[in-house]
Length: 408
Image (tube, one colour):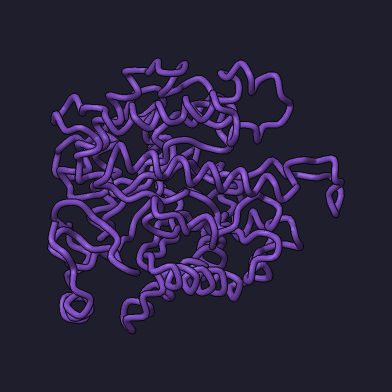
């Protein structure tokens, strides 16, 4: 792999910017505050999250082939990836696990659903053909399938506890998660023969989607009796990030790794005041500056959900990105917003107006920050991934979608 001299990299960024969104060759890696390909060319990541992509590929969610104007038929996995690529997007983020409780990738510890694995094989194979890269989230804080609640239920010691955050410390849960990391990185694609750890179509791994301590008090400030709201839980989460990122690097040294979190700052952090809300965010167990610091974390990434967090002002969006970008630069790591979305109500007569008046200004501001960072060589932001393409062909579903984040 070619080393990237700093001056040359800056020169390339300035001179080759118009073509920077073209598919890069080989593995993408972090170099200082930039993503680069194996030839040290800047890789400006822009893309989409997907919902139920694994389920669509596996055929457990109803879908149908599209009849294109050309007469060609195209499956929904291929069409979703192709439509993103045609829009100059080069990265897709997906959950490498089931998002439905009744469809798991890992059914029991070490026991895998081959149908789900073959679906993932298909997605990665199609992405490679189109020059798309894929971020794979290894687990989830929220979803029962394959995720935090599953591991605590599987562990004989963890399931005796009423603390869901025992996931981060229980020896059995941690051993099972390490085993899952090994199984994922050593999976051989049944369509192209590539082992996942050797597949350039994978952009990076998320350790887990939105890891948090289970701090959801009914009153404020939270009572001392809620252990998940105490600082010790944040220390446990951090130890888990350090352990799992280091272990992942022993199994796969070629791909980048990030945490997968929203990016809140913890109590007492220098930028705690930049959090959304009135104090709850600092008690989630996350602490962006600390979580992104380990050597096993290659780039910093956050999510941006103004509706969920109660901060709807456009100025907050800009501040959220700028403050995190500054922290990432201090860590000398690229910075990506790997989830951002804006809900609209599609079940009202004002649906189109909602898209124009509500979602459009949000997207314009976020993309404007990215474009400005690129044009001025600020290295503030190196990747931006919107939420979400939904690969369902269902006009009724979309029309009736309330609090809808999807783009169909």
